[in-house]
Image 1: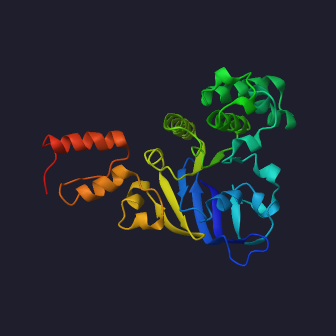
Image 2 (image 1 turned 135 degrees about the horizontal axis):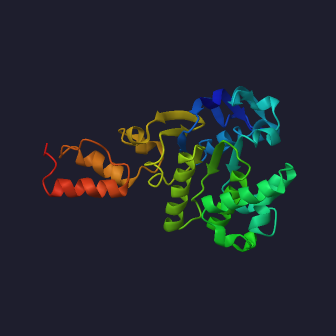
Image 3 (image 1 turned 60 degrees about the vertical axis):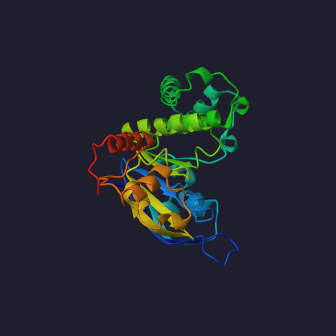
Length: 284
């Protein structure tokens, strides 16, 4: 089932003579885990703003083509209506925080929708558990680290039960361990049935979870497909994306040793390297 369809989308910000997005077409299926990547200024954040209607409702400009969310044309639905289907967590989570306790932050949107108080309590509990932040329930969000704030905002959106979750550079301000744990949470949410779309530069943590990668450059989709296949292509690093080092290593290694597949993670790469060293891999 297609949950999000982008058709021949071209977009100019107000006053701009150069389009930020150029004839972009994309189809996303229910349950997909999608990475959107590309060099700075390639149009990644602009693209995801079209998913929940911020473009064209909030950011005006010139909008050509169309974006469909569950078959609904985003030009004909309000941002509030679309937010019931698409939840977006932006790069700076503090800008999305509105209240003075984590619990109240998660409840805020639900109360505005008139959700039953008992249902609100259950959804708060579930969201805190899914994001592994039960211990932050009564904390002031503005006193938390950026990584913790990111989880709070995600929990608040998760409680609204959108079917599509979109993240804009979620690990940008996280230390390596926090980033690892957060991407594990995204994988768990995907397994629960959520469609996950992540704009990200740090690809090494996501490649093993994603089923597709979309590479943007100068407002156009230049690569799309299986993450390992795309990232293993010759010359892909010249686009300006951060190809995981273990993928680059195995691409070079394949010239000397019979490597049957590119590893999905550092752990898998380590296992294959041990097999090569101890002679369990045929030499070319």
